[in-house]
Length: 291
Image (cartoon, rainbow, N blue to C red; front, top):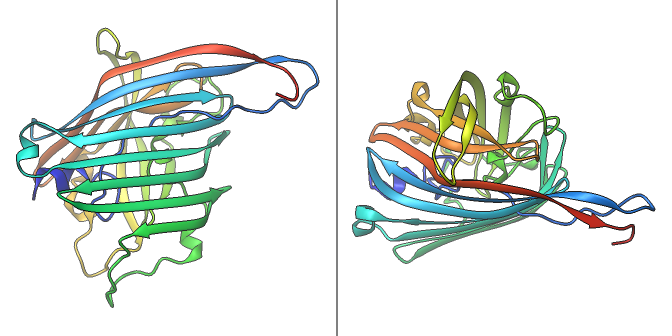
């Protein structure tokens, strides 16, 4: 297995390039006649990706939350010795809004390139339903492929927003509630579920410009639903479910948790994604009715 292929196997059933999600924002409109402050949080993070202890890639994100809206942008690329095997890049973007504990994407776009071969996904979504999708290349036809129906594209999130875990309120304490959820994901080709379960609470201090405080550790299991081949080997078959952890931490004053560290046990060794820079800055923007 090439290092790049293992890196791309984190969320999807077709070995898509990893994207570590974060958020950038749309301005929320005011529904009252008087002016008020809109909470804005700027979030920046960089992540290193290792396989068996060797660095195989890096990802960076620059984003912002404004009110209940988000808009995310992430770039990733192979690095270190893995570039001798494969030269790959990925760019992801997405936008939407948060409603209680739900993430409601409105758009998602993915561009990847590996050794001259590219993929592209563009989706429009409304209230958890995919209304338009373009995915290139298309899935190859096979008699054992589980067909994707419109029902598989309802009540879902995209791979980028799948990493956003909203709580009921910004001041909600970290705990089991963060992990008590099943995330339904459609990546443009395949449908799969990620079931989170509570494992532990930890305290971390990553040093300057990273996160210091409590993290909630969730276990995760991947369940292919549609788009994959029933007779073929899926990503779920390659993962040791007992060694999958997602460490979630809060983005300041947003009520949203994002990954700080991801550990994925595979047959080729542990795939680990960890934050090397993790900062969030909150401010208030003053707006008036009609703005």
